[in-house]
Length: 398
Image (cartoon, rainbow, N blue to C red; front, side, top):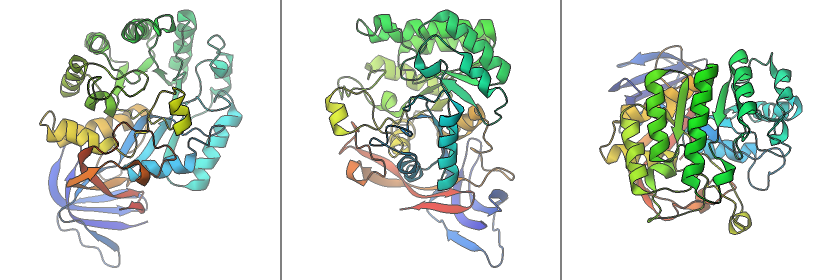
């Protein structure tokens, strides 16, 4: 679809100006001032900010098998409402995504819906059994596969993780680590995260595999990653909006890893400023109220992510809007190999229009997600998604 957006404040990782953008045949064709094209759909965007759509490196859409919590359609619509057009899905479906059959089921659903772009991870170990990685060979020729992960449980056996990293390097996959040593999970969740972070950094150094550390939450883990990045370049990491904006004294909502202390949040924000943290990953994890009452960890995040990050990071003066675009769009696209995340000719025409001055109050009843599990209910933030555009198609409008 062809679309002309005029007089927007155009912001990505490297630019910030008032201008126009023309999308033709799904890609950005022209960016500039006073673009005029006859017989074209025009959006008058004066007063709004246009950014590259957001990309989530970490979410759970629960399909197949757990669709009472979420499914690919509701998850995709939640993503669009939050300004996202690309999402990387974890493998903890039912059955676990260890087979071509489960992977194709997700991909077929993505194609059928034609809403957002999905990257479905496959599991590091078969069925999350922690021991068997022979299934990885079945995906050796799958050019669409970007990442593997046992997120939700992690890989406890260091030899297995080492061998999996060698496989990931051989096939050009990112290995996404849920850093949690289960022998410490019921003793000290800080130790549990820190030990596994150190182990996986060391194994990545030895193997040369591309390692992505999921939902980093402790000041110590940040320090380990910072030191590692000084020495080698095959490590990336994400943090969640809730680990940026909540501390235990504000709201100790049950998530994994848990909400941390003020000093951890301080170090996370400094690491974002310093370029240590590559991206925001929502860890969107829908649950029913009954599941939450039984103790299931996790929260929905796609529909509140931008407002929380904008308010906590940009409105506070910690970082610029350019930097926020870098960690919510450009870097995520780079990690997942997507032609998105920038406002430039030749890039896919996935953009979001925002009202940065609009104050919102989080109301889970308005969520497109089936999950209403959020610690942010009733809290106020700035920045509201007005429109999400994918390949020139308006797929969400406030």
